Amino acid sequence: MIYLQGGNSTIEEGSGGSEVITIQKLVPYVNIESDNTNKLVPVSLMNELQYPLDSSIVLVGQSGNTEALRIISNISLSDNNNRLTLNVIPLQYYDGTRLRNFVQEGNTTSLKGTYQTIGVYIEDKDTVPVNGKKRPHD
Image (cartoon, rainbow, N blue to C red):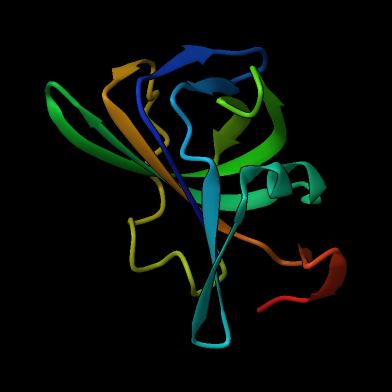
């Protein structure tokens, strides 16, 4: 499981039912949980992931907290790794187990809006780099 966090975030409608999430003030490290251990690695790790990725988006805004399951179809880092853009689509059915604790499936409501903080839990089904080498993750 990968966790990333950021500040001011906006979500806009994309094409074909997708949403574009732009995260500002990105925390420069992501947390990777594997085999009951946690490691902090540079956020540039996000460029190494293979799509699609199941994720749980946790948003904090003026009207409260919102959570939803989404499929990440693309990730883009910019502004010296201070801004992250995610292209996502609603996750209709989740057959995994690691994200079940975060949100019930089926929240396909548009997340369009502005939020103060965002947390993204990503279920990495493939591999993640650790110290420059790739190893199985999960």
